[in-house]
Image (cartoon, rainbow, N blue to C red; front, side, top):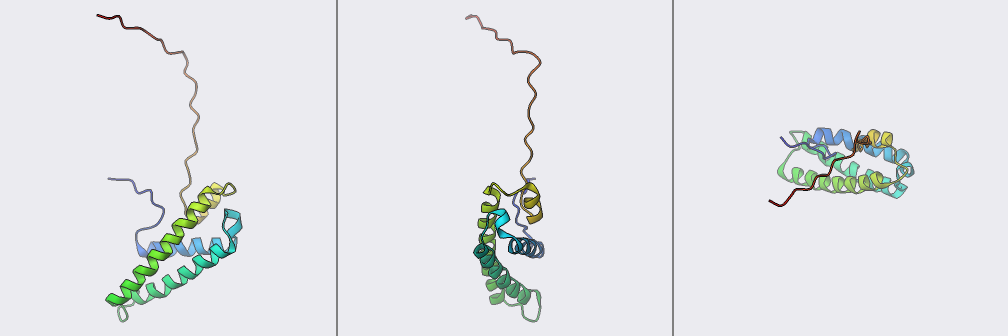
Length: 129
């Protein structure tokens, strides 16, 4: 079984929760994680468009093939922007692991230093036979 390392949830209900958390935190303080107010505003607009389209498809009375197509298009645009912003956040030197965790992004593993070996390796030469 392959390990899923993608931070973007696959299930739409989980994605909905994820993007609302990310949106709220980025909108509140974009510069602390290397983003601009314009980045936050653009992402927020995509989340609102996703919300409207997702709501239509969750209701049996309004769900249709065309509504699902619209929802999928809004989802694609939102996830593309999410990945773009996440790359900026991950690369920004001021982003802490706590920031990453609160945003739902992957927190890099702490590097473990390896202790020096107790003894030097022994070198032996093979004689031609």
